[in-house]
Image (tube, rainbow, N blue to C red; front, side, top):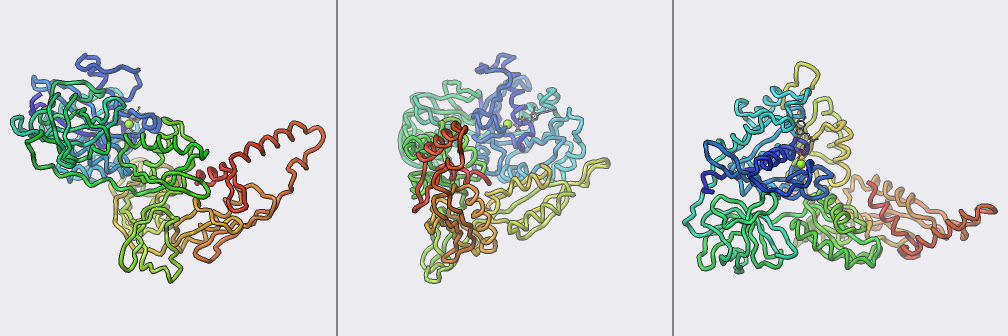
Length: 611
Ligand code: GDP
Ligand code: MG
């Protein structure tokens, strides 16, 4: 396939707007015409979403690629779909996949309209100079309003309504017109087959047998089995053992040429050698590297501990394996007096964290406790600035001798799209989460009939305010209509303090939190109440306290219980009595001792897993 018949594109779409359905349509057509040999694994297989968690949640986490062959103007064209995740947490993966594309489909559900996530990804695509093809899908739905949504696309993105395609991936209507538009509107990649090899690495996978598999987009030259290549970044040399394309399963080919997107296997053993954004060249024929990527930035940190402390080695091994397929997670060891040995992991966002947790449980059968998420703070001292992403390392800011000049927290520029009647509710939600610079405007004026106008609200919010239950509240307070997205907004000075929880006067390290002082009493009371509910009574009275610095903010007292738990049971209740003793024995095994207080591991699980 020469350059001029290749098109590299991706699909920008909000979750559930029909990206996978459209991709599956194309793929099934390909199988029917026999052009591509695909592994057939049933009718409902979603071509792009390979992970179990992706299929269950209907989201794309890991960018995938799929190639298709399409006849147009009497010629076979090779269309490479480079999938992008549709969620804000994965903006890094998005820009990485877009770097290998010349165009993108902006896919919008004609019954739902533009959502916040589409806007941010659209801007990334625009900035990269990609040709955008607007597509309204699901026009078969009675609730679809293609004219109104076309007007929305015009006012939101400045798109000319005459460029918009109207399709239904379900009935198949217009699905081919999209392929034609890809061929006609998106420019082919440029590149010269006679120039020295220049390959851009935009992703890597790990295969137990072949080692690291890199996904590359060929800029110039040609790459074949047996070639000797080198990395611009590490200067390491490798011999190519296999090249091919993703169809969407791997299909070996004899070579990869300019404009093609595919995979290479070389004798690369460690995934740390594969640098996303690296440029590869032929040994002895150096080239100028392509502008690389910023490394991904972890925005949410949490401690992950095994429920059974004996499982630590196994857990760490599972985490390491999982990060081979998800390079954006950072790992450090962490130990806690309450929870034992564990790992502190950094994630791109809370959805990313949830997904990682689920993958650990699904794919590695891990039984874990995960601590409350913390964002990375900057603690400014007179002569240095320290990043702190673990509450236990946070200094006591109320202690004047601590030499801390200032504490800064990450903030985000947030946008929320809602029908106008929810605007007031959304504003109060934002204000309750320390919003500033609040502003809003209308995206359209609604339709003549029942549908109300849509408005976009923008503001800045501390990142820490949206990593807890913000998203759930947003959804419930807008009856599910609001969509939300955010971008990095830098750092800002803030009045923050470390809150510690004491059981019988002893701090429980795994529960420490960083709070804004304006909320310290509320947060303290809430957590102390929760602990009181979850912690089993002991043989003696146990004070449960929340402290900031030396000051006690909130307190509950756990009253003592009688020594014999079976004392209240009598006579014919033998079975119940036995069961009770059995339970007691069972939970004894998993007890953690904090000072003189016995805490079952389950209690931690309950404290940390309920929001
Ligand atoms: P994704 O999250 O963007 O990948 O969305 P999916 O492809 O998983 O689609 C979300 C839902 O919309 C599924 O229930 C699909 O069956 C449905 N859907 C997708 N395309 C169409 C369409 O053109 N018409 C109708 N009526 N439903 C569709
Ligand atoms: Mg999908």
